[in-house]
Structure formats: structure tokens, C-alpha cells
Image (cartoon, rainbow, N blue to C red; front, side, top):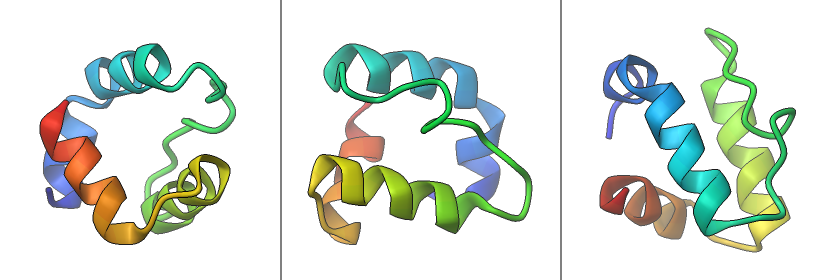
Length: 61
């Protein structure tokens, strides 16, 4: 999933992530243009997932 696809439906993706992973907060999922990789990195760390696992999770939403 590229950044444009991620940004295009972020509110929907964010809701699904919060349903699937209750430990994620709105602050964790705050999308700032240009800081997408940083946000995904923080989510990876909080969930204990690899970059590849995060991409798979996002594609499955």
C-alpha cells in the first residue's frame, strides 16, 4: 500500500486498526503528511510487529 492509498482512506483504516488492536490510541494513529513512516514505525513498536507484518495488516483491512 502506497502513501497515497493510505492517506485516501485513512479514517476508515484508522477505525479498523482501533477495532483490531484496542491498545492503539488516536495519538498513535495521528496522520501527519510527510511523517507516515514515523507513524507506522511507532505503531510497529507498540504492536511488536515487523514492517512486513504491518504492511500485511494494512492490506488486509
